[in-house]
Length: 144
Image 1 (cartoon, helix red, strand yellow):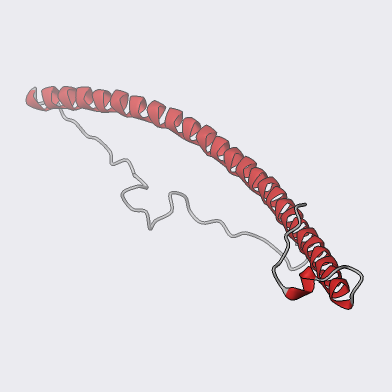
Image 2 (cartoon, one colour):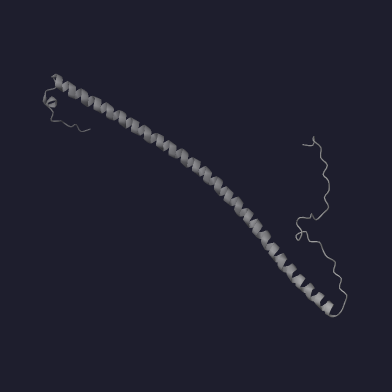
């Protein structure tokens, strides 16, 4: 450390007098104060570093959870996308068959053949009606 000399009258007196003792005492107190301040500063830095390390660990764990959820959603999306592709292909196939049957039906009607097509119940046309008769469910209070 470099020492600074002040131009005060106390610093000009020789160290044997009372004024030199006061200057030395102030210098010693200042050094102690500076050391204590530096110690507190290092402690604050260390505490902040520990907080940041804990936050990094927390964020890394959260990131791993989010990545895991993304991977799960990606797998589910791929599965649903595959099922959707199968359903689209099935729809195309059934639409083609229906068109063919419509053409056959039209030819039969033009030829005068009796065509009696029974109505096939479609539960999608009447969603308020269940496709099967309701069966009562037997349960007692001690079942659960």
